[in-house]
Image (cartoon, rainbow, N blue to C red; front, side):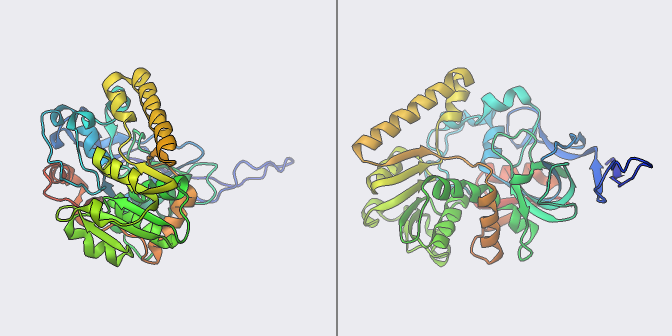
Length: 396
């Protein structure tokens, strides 16, 4: 690994009082490091850990983070599987660590291919926890040496599977001292996805009723904890193995979809429904259980899959028209708001997520960790469903 240490110093010119630099911070400017590259679509075997991947220069608002732990998200495995996944038939009862059940493998194959293929090779990874190695000139809220955690936007092409990752200032916040890097790295992407749905879109308030469809995964479980923290009454569907954990987190009702008629078991109407499953039957149930003026939000928007099928120029307009059609339909037929929800950087949300994590009110359980050198084994364990929960990669 090559690096150059640079210190900016303050100098006063004779006769001019002009300052060349004011920072007194020592900043490690790394020029290359290890990273896991995705050179082509395929199974875990295509992942390539290289020792000498270039680190770009920081933009003014960017932060260089020395990664200590990064989590594996469904987005990472879905992006890389284009060549293989089209020939696989997935069990529709499978719920992954973000609560996503794959209904139609052809629609999900090569997720984001229209975006990523022209940019290959890319670095996978979204979540991160580590220490700040350098900051851009306009960064004010963070300094070198601080421990931070955060997450990149879903469309970022230089991800976090690397010794040194680059994130914008508003994509990071201080890591709570009460949790480890492994624990911290499992939280931000899932929690920010849930935050965007419940707090930014539905704007949930104390006393409201919230239904989370698929509460056993990382997004669903984060949503439950965020809603409980606001003071909402929360119900959810999940697998039987998740019920105790969900009730302990504050949900008032947890229905086992594998052994109960969840449509008959869930009573009353809700102000907001977050559907992490997104199949026709859960969408129908969620819509019908909403109060007038309520919000239905699904993680399974079709923008990326339609762009993959038809290209960005055609797919995105089709997706926009499809979403608008559903919004108009449900607004007139049920008096509710319908939306596709995606993770997006949110400084306010990330700070609240940090606060809740610090006091133990927001956590995402980690089932297993792997060293970054075993990234192929980690992805294979997820692909084959050997591990259903959250997986984290550690960087020494």
